[in-house]
Length: 515
Image (cartoon, rainbow, N blue to C red; front, top):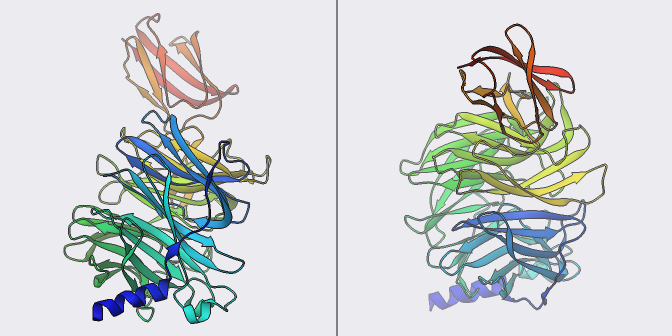
C-alpha cells in the first residue's frame, strides 16, 4: 500500500501527459537564425541537433536532427515545425540509445501564454517522432494561478537498460527563477519509474548536467552546498551516497560539466579572479576526482579561458577524452588582446594531458579576427575517430546580418582548422601567440615541410636564397593550410636561407641544409 501511495504522489505532482502539439516534416532547410545545439558520435556516425532561434531570444519553433557519415557528409535529415515556443539545451539534453539507435531530447515548452513545462521528445533510428511528453510544474497549488510557472529539463541520459535519467529545475511556488532541482527516472515509453526532489536546504542551486556511473547504474550531478561547488553521487534509485567539494572559489554554478572515466571523474566549473578587477568574467577550473577514495587528485586553473555566453544564455563547458587519454575542453569566452577584453566572443578548445597540463589552446572565428565584428558561440563537441574534434554552435557577424547562423567545425588532433588562432598563458592572462612554423626535415634531400601551429588566413610566399644571396626558388603557400611541402630536388647540395613572406613583409627566416 505504501508503494501505491508513492506512485500517486508522483503523478499528482508532475502531471505527466502526452503532448498534443503536432509535428510536420518540412523539406526546406532552417532559415533565419539557427544554431547547432548538441552533437553525438555513435559508431563513426555523427548526429547533431539543430534549431532556429531569434536573436537575441532563445525561443525555438523549428528544429531537427542531421545525420552525417564518417566523411562528414549529410546522409539524412529530419526537420520539424512546432506551433509552440520550445527551449532546447546546448551541450546537454540530447542522448542516444546505442542498442536500437533511438534518440531522446529534453528541454521545455511554452504550453500556453504563461506556463513553461518540461518537454521530452523521443525519435527512432529513422528520425521519426515516437512520442512526446510534458512535465508540469510540481507546485500544483500555485501553478494554475501563478504568472510564471517555469519548468526546465536540463539534461537526459540513456541508462544501459534503456531507461532515462532526467535532471530538471523549477521555480519554487512559481516565483522567481528556476532555482530548485529534481531528478526523474523514466522507462523507454515515457512512464515515470521514480522521482526525487533535491533538498534545497542542503544543495542550493540548479542542476545543469548529469553523468551515469556504469559500475553500479548510479549517476552524478553538480550543485552548490554552503559556499562550495560539490560533485554529488547518487545510487540507481536517486538517493545521495556521497558528495565532495572541488571548487571553493567565488563562481557561478551555471558553468559545470562532468566526465566519468574508469576510476576518475573530470569536472569543469569556473572561478572568479580576485580582486574586483575583471571579477565579472569567470575563468576555467578543471578538477580530477578519484571516485574510489572520494578525494580531489588535482585541481588547476586556466586563466586563458575567460568564460562567457552572450546570446544563447546557456553557458557551456564540455569535456571529452581522446583516444590517447588526453582531456579535451570546449567552451565559449571573450577574446583577450593582451591589454583588455573585447566585446567579441570566441569558441575555445583546450587540450590537457592526464595530469591537467596544457598541451595547446586555440580559439576560432568564422571569417576573420577583427575586433567588434564577430561573436562565436560554442555549444557542443565530440571526439572523432582520427583524434580530431567536431564542434558546433552559432556565429553572429555584425557586418552581415542580425541573425545567428549555425556552424560546424572539424579539427585535426592538434585542433587545427581554418580561422584557428593559438592562445597561451603569459602572466595569468590570455595572449595571442604567433607560433613560428616548424621546418622539417633539416637537413633535407628531395623536399622539406612547413607545418603551422596556427593556420595562415592569407596567402604566403617562401623565398629560398643560396649562400651567396642569390634567389634560387619561390613558391606560394595558399591560405588555411596546416602543412606545406616544398620540392628542392633541383637545388644543389649546400646551405640555403629561407624567408617566409606576407604581403612583401618578412615574417620568419630559416637556415636549411640540402643533402
